Image (cartoon, rainbow, N blue to C red; front, side):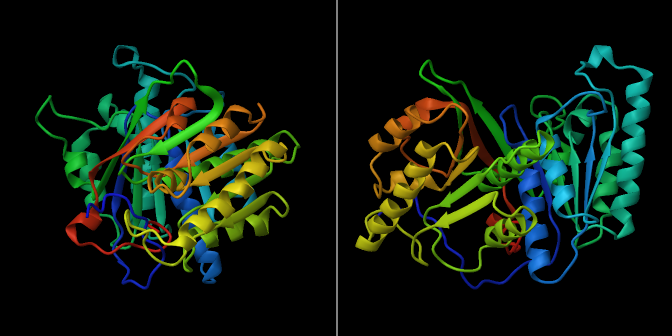
Length: 380
C-alpha cells in the first residue's frame, strides 16, 4: 500500500531543545507569513505554560513610508501580546536592484545587521526573525561570510528564521554557505493563476514547511487590518484531520481569542490517529463532512473576513470529501471573504484552478529527516 498522504495528529513525542536555523525563500507568497505563524504558535505555547517567549522581528529593506502585507499582522501581535514582540525596520521604502544600490542602503543594512548580531548573542530572545536578510546578502549589502560566522555563534536554544526571495548562491552549482548552514530550507514556489481564478482564494500546498504557519500569519493579518480600519474582521479557522489533543496551534488560537474576543472562531475534526489511504474508517468520513458543513455555511454567510481551511487538501485527496461541492461553494463566496486552503496532496483537486494565489512549499532540507526531534510551538 502506498502511504503518500496521511496527517500525523498530536502524539506524545520527545522534543528537541536545540534551536534550528530556518530559511524560507522563493518567489511565491508565504515566507514572512510563515515566520509570523511560527512566532504566534510559540507565543501561544509560552503563555499557556506561564512563560514569556521574547521575539525580535528585524526587517531589512522595509523602511518607513511604505505599507507591507505583514505590517497589520505585526501590529496585531504587538497589540495582543505587549512586551513580547520587538520590531526593527531598516532600509528605504522602495525596491531596487544591484545597479541601484546607494551608500544609504549599505549603511542601513549594516545598522540592521549590527542590531541582529547584538540580539543573537544577548540571550534575550527565544526567536529572532531576520526578514528579507536573504536578498540583503544576495545583493552584496552584507558579506555572507560575516553572516554565517554570527549565525554559528548563536545560543544553542535560539531559533532563527531567515526569509526573502533570493537566498544567496555562489554560481549556478557552487552552493551557498548560508543554505549549507541552514537546518531547514523551504522554498515557496509560485504557480500562475488560471483564467478561472477567483480573487480572495489562496492555496498553500507542497511537502515543505510553512503551510499552516502561513495560514496563521494570514489570520493575524486579517485581525490587524480590522484594527487599523476600526472594524471587526472576524476569522474562522477550520481544521481537518486534527482531532487529537496537544496541538500548539490550539494554544496560538486560544491566545488570539484571549487577546481579541469575538474575532476568532475555531473548529476542528478527526480522530487522534493517522488516516492512511486505503485505511479510512467511517468516522473519518463523518467527521470530514461535519467540518465541511460548518465551513460551507460560514463561507456563504459573509460573517467572516478570513476563513482558513487547514488540511482540506489531504482530506479531499483521501476521498473523505468530494471536490465538486467545494468548487461550487468557492465560486459563490462573497467578494469580501478571503479563503485560505492548506495541506499537501498527491492529486490536485479541481478547486486548485480557482486560486488567485497558489504557493507550493518545496522541501529542500528539513532537520526531521536527519533524526532531529521536533519542537512544540515551532514544528507542531
